[in-house]
Structures are given as C-alpha cells and as structure tokens.
Image 1: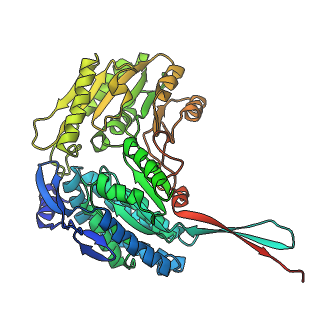
Image 2 (image 1 turned 30 degrees about the vertical axis):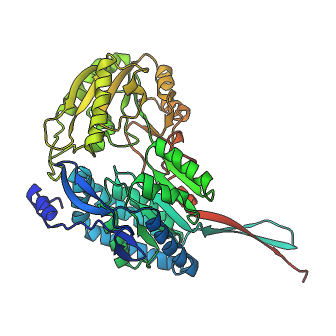
Image 3 (image 1 turned 180 degrees about the vertical axis):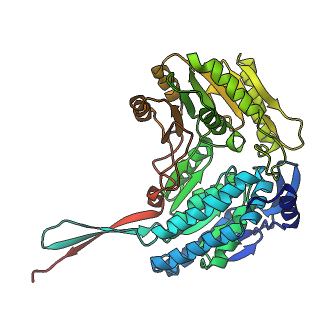
Length: 497
C-alpha cells in the first residue's frame, strides 16, 4: 500500500542511518577511522557519515570471507539450508520495504514510487528466485569406456567481490549477492560511495535472517580506495562490476596485475529506440518512448536516449512525446506524485548540463527542458530535435534526462546508425511486421532487444552487453550463476570386476 507524502516524510525523520562497514557479522569503523559524508541530492543536506574503507578494511573482510568459506559453514552447507536462509532474507526485505525505500530515496534522489517498486518487488524476488535455484545446480557424467567414470561437478568460486553502481543500489546488490550466495560463495560488497546506506542495512537484515558471520561483508568507500583494493586483492576469486566503461577497464587491469581473478562487467550504453515507418504512434508507444529515456531521470545504463524515428512519423512523434514529457512532475522524491527525482550529485548535474549545452552548440533544437530552479540537483526532462549521428549528444553516454530525436529514411539507415557505437547494451524496436522485427533484433549488436515496448526483460532473462557495454558474463537468469561457479572434472579409473 502506498503511503502519503507526509507519512513518508515521517519515516524519513525517524531514520537513523548507519554508515559503518559491516565485516564478519559486526558493524565497524574503517581501520584508520576515516569517514566521508553521504548527501541527499534532492536537498544537498548531509544524511550520514560513512566509514571510508581502504585496503586494510577490504583485507579484513576478505580474511573473514575466506575463513568461513574454507570452514564450509555456508559453502558446503546443504543447498536446502542456503535456500531457507535466502528465502528469509526475501521475507525480511518485504517486511522492511517502506524503511528501505525511504532510505534509498533519501540517499539517491530517486522517486519513492520507483524505490517501492524495486525494493518491495524486485529485490525480494531476486533473493527468492536464486534461493530456489540453490538446490538445482547439477553436474554431469561424461560418457567413457568401462574403465573409467568421468564426473563434471560445479563448485562455488570462493570469495566473490561485487562493486555496485549508484543508480539502483539495492537492486544491484541483490543482482550480485543472491546468485553468489545461492551457490555457496562468500561476498565482499562495495556500494557506490554516493549511495551506501541501503546496502549496509541489507547486510544487517541478512545477518538477522541467518547468513553466517563472514559470508556477507560491506565495505563502503571510494573506487580508488576500496574498489581498487577489491580488484587487486589476491584472495578474491571473482569480481562482478556494474558501472562505467572507464572503470570497467580498470578492473580488467586489476585482474591482470593480481591473481587473474574472473571479472564480470556490465557497463555503459547508448541505446537506440527505433520506430520503423509501419509503426503506429499510439499512446502506448509514446509512453514507452518517454519512460525508456526518462525513467530514473535517465540515470540508467540501458536508457534509450537515441530515438531513431522514420522520417514520415517524426512530426507526429515529436509533438506527442513533447506533450507527454511536459506532464512529468519534477520535485520532492518522497512525494508519491513525483515522476522524476534529482541527479545524483552536483558534479553529475553539471556534467549533464554540459551535454545539453553541447547539443545546442552543435545545432540540435531543444524542444523542451533544461535547468531547473528547484533546490538540489534537478534537471527538467529535455528533448532535442534535428539530432545528427555525429553530434556529441548522439554518441556519448549522457546518463541524464536528455532525449534526442533523429529522423531515419529507411530501416537499414536506422540499423546502421544504431550499430555505429562503441556500446551494445540494449535496443527497442517498434514495428507491426514480425519479419522486420526479427531482422532488426538479429542484426542489432547488443545484449537485449525489446520489440514493441521498452523492457530489460525480467529475472529469468540474462542481462549484459556486447562490445564496450560488458564482458561475456551476465547478470540475471541462470546465466548469472556462471560468474560464481567453477567446473571440476573428477576422473575415476574403474578396475575390472
């Protein structure tokens, strides 16, 4: 049940966020006592001071994670036992949805409605789904002659590191933690320095659910300190990272400079929204076009900022999406009537505004949007018309509420422009012709193609990118387990009877 604005503000006023690290089942400060502040981006006010973990703290967390892994308390527990504990985690998240959603809204500037949907719906579903998979990871027996038996088994990789982004803090935590713990790994989690609070609280709930001490550890800090220490640690077996392509490159280097740990990467995007000439410009299409670009304030790696529209439909499309976007309400994220919250930081707002200025300077026509006079770090949802493929706003990831409309003469033109990017994460295609839909889906070099609606799939479908949007690893689906498992062959010579 959705509460009122006043009720959410009351919850916010009652919260006392804990910014400490969570290591080996205990809250603790950083070893050197260093701290930083996390700020509510909708107001600019400080929410909490947070432990600034560095290499010594990461090492303490890894030691705890390795100790419990080697002891087998979790890693060699009956899979049904792990399942029951993770199901309890899901239940506790549901019971604390309002608290967690308000905490995350305050820390991120995300709307309370988005936080409620993600934390009340998606997060517990991830823990439940992977809990149910815990006792369904099977090995194989390879065919041999009568003189041998070949067993192919799956074992947990060991200690898993996870480095999270700031745009979907608790959802991304669930994406990494649920599958890694389901198969028996221990985990060391670094939340983004901008948004650590909900992940720290999740670790406390997981301890309450019965996750053994040392299995889940949260080390808040900065990328150049805690993040680098995770990437370079010689006793972390695999790392899953979601964030920018620039930082993803660093984790590849960290692996090479340390123990050649496995690295799963889910990174940036410049995803197209393609409207072919046989599509009908319906309210549904316009809603998907608007939400694909402006959901979460455009702070989404799969946001469909490049909207490639068949030339005969551009005028109608532009008019209708302009009207839809003007109806978005910008404001207090704790108000359930708010549609778009704030940018994550002052510096991020400044960067997004520089992209908007570059669009103007390069000759694109701004239909609506621009800066906001609200306190905090707000930007009005912005639409550009007459965008060309060589413009900066058409080529670089903006990560803000900026939509560019690009007229296309043919489907093949749209395919060429959509494919001409370093990224390959997501695409949306609207058409009434199933043959054209399949042709576009098969031809677009990206990890997810959504037809006649913007969607990233769901928990059952793998999510990740081609090219510089990701590595071969995938989040979600049964494929996510691969990041946290290793394969062992057991060859048994069989004596004659």
